[in-house]
Image 1 (cartoon, rainbow, N blue to C red):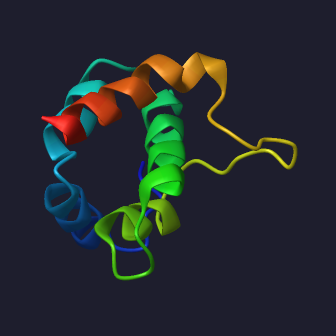
Image 2: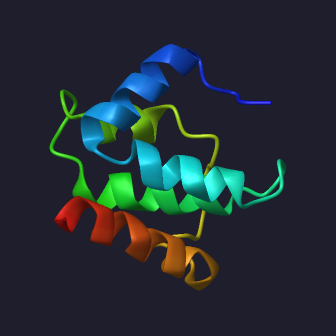
Length: 91
């Protein structure tokens, strides 16, 4: 079950960011409790947002994923999904 404070706002930010389709496809292909798509989205948004008015910042602030205290970048196990976000935004 999503933990977003406002799922409608999250979906709108996904659409505005151009990542709705790729994220939805990731979610459809994973188990309900798999946070890999959320982790990849978190790190992508963290690395590429343009400030508080950016849709990526809205996604980052509503993420189900919370990095560990020692995490400073996208973990290797999320990297292939992270790269899918990069590809989607570069199209």
